[in-house]
Length: 261
Image (cartoon, rainbow, N blue to C red):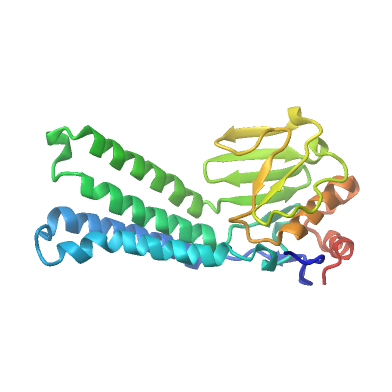
């Protein structure tokens, strides 16, 4: 169960550079490509290396899933802070859990799809195998693009909340949200907003939740859930503070209001 207070940390911090996470994903792509080449052109089929190499991607994928589970656990112990992008824009970035998830998907999808292909699938007209490989490549491309674009993330601006998911985006103006909301919720991996004016909400692509009750998926976001709810409610209920969002003076008032050091 979460405690009644959030960790006593600075409300706003400089933006980190997730270089290690991107390198991890890039390395997974290199391994997947090298394994694919080895399967088709390395002469390993039927040899002693067929067994260990054949299961390597799935083994690596399962290991990445374990790392992901360890990273996304304990949401109440995540930092109570927002990342300063520039004056007027604060960000909740993705944690390393999403990067591990992408690594796992690269390995598992590659290990599942590639063995289904013959050396020349187009010649053999193996439509199911080609379709599976194409879908796997599409999913991998979307996830990798999300990592290198810094998604998923949530931005707070003077206009409202901007949510960037791996395959969609949503903009929720402060004026659209109900006063006094969102309250602290018992769910560590999601936050449901209350929208009084759904006609103001803009949604594109694949997003979760309705316009009247948008769902913020916190599983991948590196922020303490109650701290985020308190920060959002502060800007909903104090319109004058929105212009100072991301400034030293605004940061000081936010810290005092939320009781963080």
